[in-house]
Length: 373
Ligand SMILES: [Zn+2]
Image (tube, rainbow, N blue to C red; front, side, top):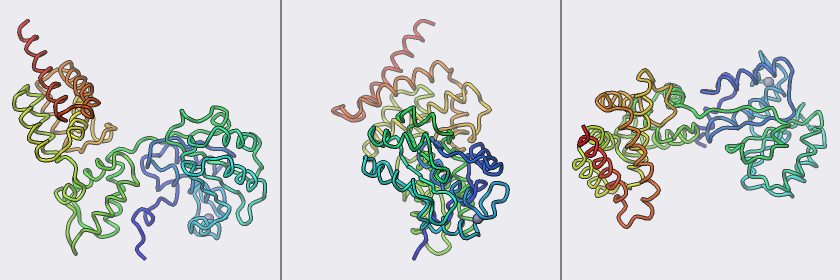
């Protein structure tokens, strides 16, 4: 059986977690000091490591020989949890089991002592999707949990959760992973697997995954399977397999707009749509670039680690050099116009029309301004 990259390289201890150092260190310290809470809320974007962290925590509190708050990953309890077969670790996906019946079962189960481990750990994924009745049924046991029970509520959308549950939980906020966080992990995997790669190829994978580690690992796996013996992972190969708008075209479009070459910009836009790219994808990519442009205009020293947007380090250098001759106001106006155009694409009789109008409207404004000077 082929073990998936995602499973093989799943973080097994707090120090394995990439990009969530604050959460990881705090949890490790609380375990070390024996300050285990009975209800946790893990809030954060998709693929940021919430479920992996929940499993590490479940191991750490049950481990026979924890070291510095980390699970040993060797004792029978760690092994049992790692195997995914521990009956005292109950994972529930609230997106598909959101009803009152499942919660009644859960409550019933929680009353009994664990059969093997020290703590029974309930990991409730996408917990904002539980129905109101289900949450109400849960409330009492979360308020007064048996001493052998730990609840971990994971959610991408904490605003949708009921306050009474949140207030009972120790809350941890997971941040969206940066491109360089994801590249770090992908590099680690490839070095381990002895697969040669170009670093910017990995940045593109991370960009495609939009900050979700799991998605990046699944994409990497897809690419690895397509490789011939000894073949290197290159940027071209990645673009070829993953599809999407070639960043070279977006750069060209960005350059013409920033340099106020409007007829040329419309020409490029039309040629991209003719090539089969969707106007929506083009707009989103361009908006990304403009947003980074604005950030760099405000602080030119920003680097890949500081920018929470899906761009590569190459893109950042390119954007930096292109925006030298325009002011903040111009970039702001252009971004604003494209943002306005984006939702209109869906209803436009010709998909690129809203973008063309946005470009023309910048042209118009610029004409007015130069007339006043
Ligand atoms: Zn252990």
